[in-house]
Length: 312
Image (cartoon, rainbow, N blue to C red; front, side, top):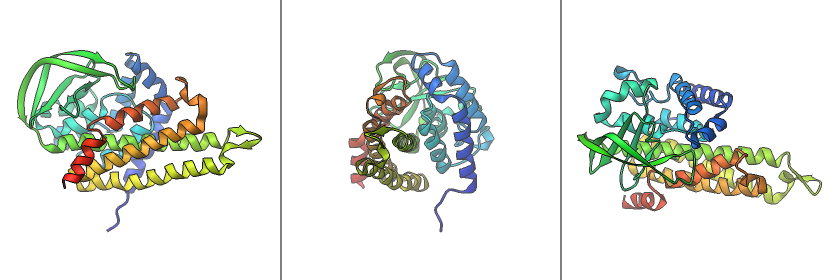
């Protein structure tokens, strides 16, 4: 048996990269960070036309009926381009919550957005101020928080706008563990994509930045740094894709840990290669540095997921 992405997966990836490259995603992310949502919402509507939020929703509810591998392919591209918005919650988690069935057609079409809290690992709701449905996953049950009153909380990544939510919690139904794991898997794929962008940007910069009369990419020290990142990312990719195939909670946790470590290494290396320019808010590097730092702890930090792996 050959485990590799199909031609359809590769075509889907190309379509996503082409769309996001031409959509000025960095500008949308910066606007989103300041509470100006329209550019980002326009971006999300385009992703809905490409089928991203419909991937895991059954065809009977207006979705595509695809699987976790398709989800990973999509979220790796979303992470590469630092797309803002509650896409993990809308495209990965809510489709696995049976209580949200009434919302599935609107989520699949891009007409609605969902956000999720799942204490203790996900105590805050992403973009609750614009979400159409707020779901709380607690003690094996799904609750819809109606008339939610979101209160903003500081986030290390300004484009990940976090909120505490209060409101009337309506108990709906039991929720499968798979819902949480799909959220973790999507975040792992985002980290992989962000790490790849950081490596690509660092390689490109090393090929054009000169120091002491030589391109910095010609120095062995820089080559070794970048090769180390490339190795870690290449070792991470099969773990993330393999976890999508098996669906095992332990495999998904292992993928999240490795993706977080690889992306963090890519971020540190990118900052070292770029130097002072990497600290500026105007450079796109900053969008990934803060994104990686936030995603490493999102949907369970490394300690939680290492315990899950060891529990096996």
